[in-house]
Image 1 (cartoon, one colour):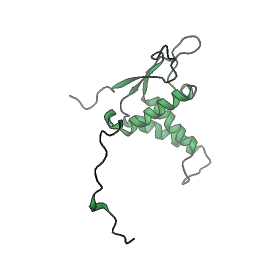
Image 2 (cartoon, helix red, strand yellow):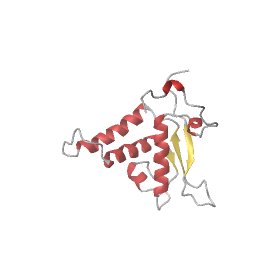
Image 3 (cartoon, helix red, strand yellow):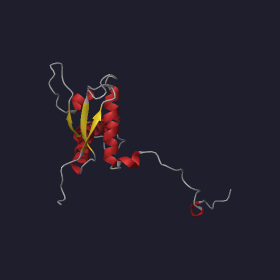
Length: 144
């Protein structure tokens, strides 16, 4: 079995789907971000930063974070059935992502960020049991 394999994807249904058609609009998203996806998102953030009159060394702005998240989300989307007014499938772009209903855009960007972190789906679920007692080895010895 080789090192490079086709990306596995999940089909996700948009939260804004009408209750009578919960599977009407969907996307396919990679299960896990690849190095190229992360690099593209970082490059998008840097393009915003470089266009800001040489503000090197300052905090990351909301525009830069937005560019990163939007690009990461688009990089992880492999397919969708979202159409224009003439029922033609729209290209997957940051501009079209920005035109989605807020709840759909938030849902997709949250999913993309989880997949960037590389956690398995079962790790996203709540823990089955509460943690045990704290370890005595980690207690502070600072006088009260």
